[in-house]
Length: 343
Image 1: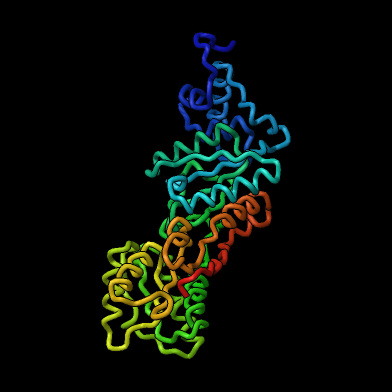
Image 2 (image 1 turned 90 degrees about the vertical axis):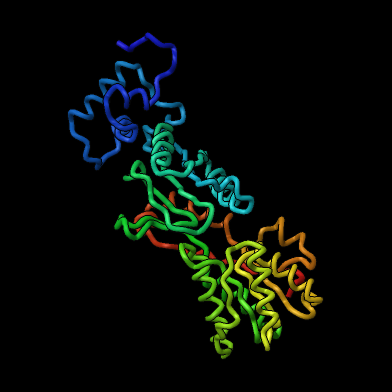
C-alpha cells in the first residue's frame, strides 16, 4: 500500500532516496530503458520504493507506452544571459514546436555536480533526448548522468582527455568565418589587412579565425605578415591599443579584421582619434554580429554572424534522426557575412 503520510506528490528523487540509488537509475528502471547494466536486486529496490511511495509517472510521460514522451531537454551554461547566443534556444524551440514536440530549457549552473543534478531533473520528465549548449565555442565535460541518453552538443565539444565515445557535435565554422571576413576586405581592394585576434588559449574561435585569415591571404597570393597580427582579450581597450600600434607601422594596414564586435568598437575609437574615416581611410570588419553593437556603431559595422539559430535547429533535427545520432559527426555550420557600412 502507498505511504499516505504526506499529501505531496512523490517524485523520482523521493524514490531514489528511499531505494538508495541515483535519480538516473530510477529513471532507467521506471522507464524500462534497455541495455543498461543495472543489477536485478537494484531494479527491485527501485520498484519496491516506487510502490511504497505511490509514485506515478509525470503526465508529460504519457507517451512512454509508445517509447517516446515527445519532450526534449536543452541544458545551457548561462546561455540565456548572453543576448546573441539565446538564438540557440530559439532555433531549437522553433524546430521542436514545428514537429509537435516540447522543449524543456534549464541552466546547468556551472559545476559538474550541479550539471548532473540538472540532467537528473530532466530525466524525471522522461525527455527523449538532450541538447547541451554553451555560451561560447569551447571544450565541455559531459555530466555522467547523461550517459546512455541521445545527446547533441551545440557550440561545444567533448574534452578529448576524457576518451569518451563520440557524440554529435554542432559548432560554427570558425575557419570559414575568418576566411569570409578577410575575403570581403580583399574584394574591397585591400591587400594590407591587419588582424586583431582573441587569445588562442582555450578559444577555438581564435585559432580558427586566424587560420581563415591566413587561408584567404594565401589564396590571393599575399604573403602572411605576422607584424599585422595582434592578440587582444576580446574587449575594447586591448583592441584600441593594438589599433594604435598597427596605425603606427611604417606601412599601416588599410583594413582591420577584428576577432569580435567588441574589439571592433575599440578599433573605431582609435581610428577616430587618429583623424581617420571609416571606411574611406580604413575599413573595419568584426565577428559575431552582436546586433546591439553592430547596428548602432557609426558607420554600421560589417561583421560575420555566428549561426546560433541554425545550430539550435540542427540539434533538434539530429536528435530525431537515429542515423545522424549513430554517426556522431562534428558538423560545421557556415558563418555568413552581414554587410553594413564599414567596408
